[in-house]
Length: 161
Image (cartoon, rainbow, N blue to C red; front, side, top):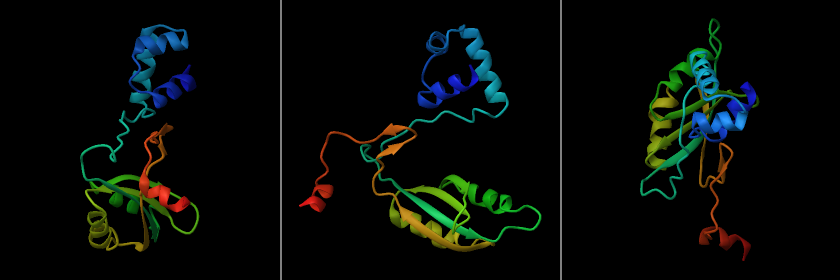
C-alpha cells in the first residue's frame, strides 16, 4: 500500500481518506494511520497547491539559479545549502552534478526583484563562487500537471510565421 498511497497523494493531495481507502481496497482507518506514520517519519513533508501565476492577477516571477560553491571541509555542501534555503525568496535547493553544484528556485514580484536578490544577497554569500540565473518565461508542466490551455498565446505564434 505504501508506494501506491504515496503516488496517489503526490498526484492529488486533496483526495479524502475515504476516497483513498476505496482506491487502495482498505479501510479509512488504515489510510489515516499510514498518512500519520508518513508525516511522523518525514516521508510526507507537506501539501501544496500548484498555482498558475500567469492566470492569477498578481505580479510573479520565478528563476532557476545555478550556484558554483566551495564546500566546507566539515559539512560539505550542507552548510551553504542551509544558508541559501533560509532566504524567504528561495523555494527549493538541490545538490546537482555537472558544472554547477546547487540548483536554486527563487520567486519574486518581478525579474528585477530576483536580479537584486541574486546580486545583493545570494552572490555575496561566503563560499559562492559563481551564479547563473535562468528566468522562467512559461511553465508548461510542473508536478505532473499540465499548465497548457487551449488558449493561443500570440507571442509564441510569431516564431512559426
